[in-house]
Length: 263
Ligand SMILES: C[S@@+](CC[C@H](N)C(=O)[O-])C[C@H]1O[C@@H](n2cnc3c(N)ncnc32)[C@H](O)[C@@H]1O
Image 1 (spheres, rainbow, N blue to C red):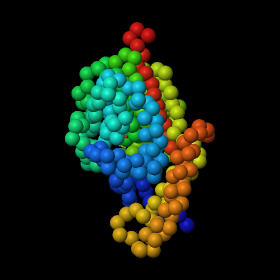
Image 2 (image 1 turned 30 degrees about the horizontal axis):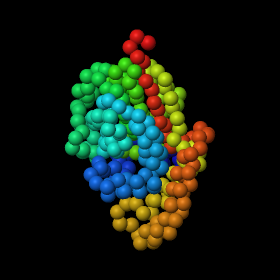
Image 3 (image 1 turned 45 degrees about the vertical axis):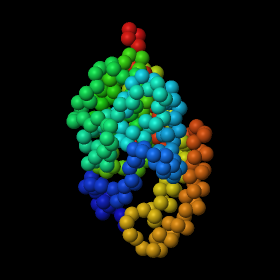
């Protein structure tokens, strides 16, 4: 029988058994097509994309993408916006990202003047930050008064980029963290609902036989047999994103504002 004493001590785990390939920066139309297919099968990425398509459509001025990774949302910005992507120097070793026009910084030295940015974008980063409060203070510092913050975080997601995945946030902790940093008009919305989460988890199970190097041919055969189910779950999961109910979801999309000077 499995007991606390006989199960794996996860604190000793140094990596995941399987890591999905990271998103690639966009270079051609072919990359767009691959990314769209990936978003269909990855409801986390797909749901974040749907929200960013709306949130970023009204962006203008300087948009600072903090922890930008492969700059996946850059193509959604209108021409009125000027993109600047920054990321930690650890991005390559820990996360597998190395993107030519990203500014890589050491420690917490972002090299962004205070109050110089119109929109701060920070997607799927906050769960990887060891000490979130000073990091959120830094997001606030960069924004000009009246500037807008756009964040996404996962909720019902597996432990990923092990061991650099530290936190899961709730609407309550996001509101607290942002208000303590000085943000106002905090709005936290759920990406998906319990049906989306069930589809997402069932899809992850269907993908297991297809993942990883080598493996028994029977395993691959099982994986192939599960493909129609995977497709069906992807369709139901995507459709489920249209309804907003329940207390379980894939993740949260958060917007907030730095108050205007004097308010
Ligand atoms: C899951 S990836 C998300 C990348 C991208 N924002 C996206 O949505 O595809 C997490 C990102 O957080 C970045 N990151 C981790 N620690 C960081 C830190 N202390 N400061 C800034 N970025 C950090 C990583 O380098 C990585 O690019």
